[in-house]
Image (cartoon, rainbow, N blue to C red; front, side):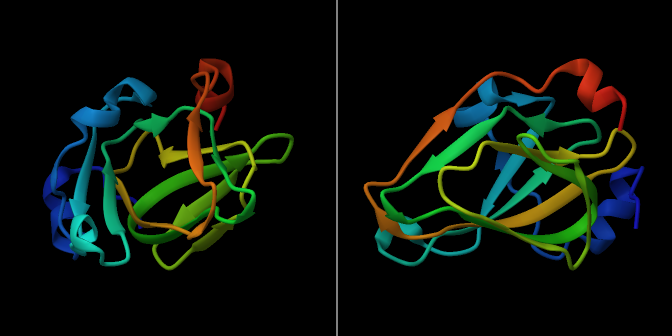
Length: 144
């Protein structure tokens, strides 16, 4: 369900908006917010609800790993997009689950006219790292 107004979105965003994503803002177009759902700084498996304002999306990026690794997105509210390099964009809605293998270049974020949130899970692996790359071309995003 599209959530054009913040008020409508807050009614369905059950995991909460959280704080501004200042640490990674340089890798996002628009404003995003992080709400940790677990105490990953004290050893719990990291689950984070990521909220995107309308039009917000992250840069192309890769979750590297020699073994295991990758990312899982569980879409919880609003509508968004996901795209792997060389493939067509996929529409994201509440209930959509995206499994992103390690070493796959991709991006994700909100539609232009909807707030969006997903729970992000970083899959454990060996020698994992994230590589942030170039922004998504405006022509690509605006054509969606």
